[in-house]
Amino acid sequence: MDIKRSIEHFMYELRLNQNQLAIKAGMDVSTLSLIRNQRRSPNLDSLNKIATACEVKVSEFIAAGE
Image (tube, rainbow, N blue to C red; front, side):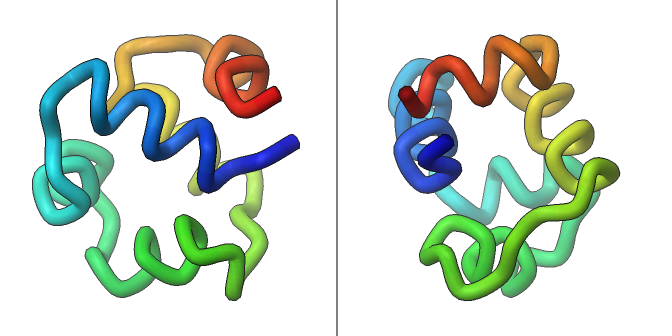
């Protein structure tokens, strides 16, 4: 599972920058940055928020990074 790849895939697909995705997910931009740069592992709640912001299920979000 490559969270960075998944995040970047959906940022590209949805034409969002990191700040826009964080706002859409209801997360602090610094938290999303740490997750994106693999310095922090996302918990299930964070994964759900990011996937929802990307308009997909968590399973689809994870699969995009494989």
